[in-house]
Length: 330
Image (tube, rainbow, N blue to C red):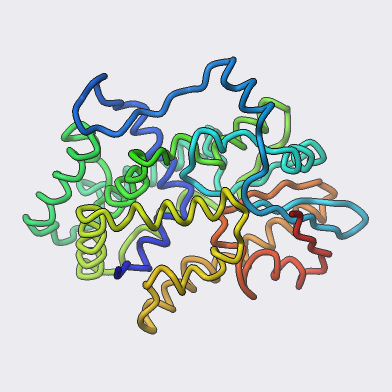
């Protein structure tokens, strides 16, 4: 299975794309009984939430960070999840309760972030961006068929750039497997933090994450979208998404760390450079932001996509370099 690493990893590591997908799906839920449509995300009832909290177990990857005489936490998330995973387990709850600041890649409930996101998306829309060659007709038709396959209205994605359209479709592709961006762990944490009067901050910007989804050239854009369309059409995206999210649910960091071995996607120097740009190149700034918040005396619960956690350029290693005592909590 050949995956286009540059764009697929970018789509899976951007909280922004998952949020757009979840919002869009919630606003355009398919009609009840519509054939072959993925199930629409459902808000749990009060009774379901009570049961979910009572029976919750820990998921994901959690580290304790000690420096300057106080403690913060680092948590690896996924941006697409199952509804039963939205309830924090006992260890994660303790870490959240012990923190006063929740730091996310992007706080999607922040009105300023939403405004800037709308502005950035409008600027990247086909009608407003700098002149660029249109998608070839065959790709445009294939893209439209995937929009229809996800039971979205024909014009649902018309205001988005082609890169954002394919990112949105990729984030929605797991809904038939119970994986929905509406249940993304980041957005759940943002809501929980507000309900408990925590300070919520963003570690990145909408402009940066939008830039991650933009191809450098029309040729690269076309190749990326063509490959992604093939993955969606043949069902290749779904097993990869299932394995990644299940590894998160099971706390299997070794499987995440060996992603490059089982994704069959790092074939060339270009692939390796793309991985570095989308993950390693972002991590120092993320680590600096967490370190600065902690240095200001805040007890931080920093939640970032789990692919940012592995290896010598992962956030745990970078925070250790910045003087933290870093302890993985089982």
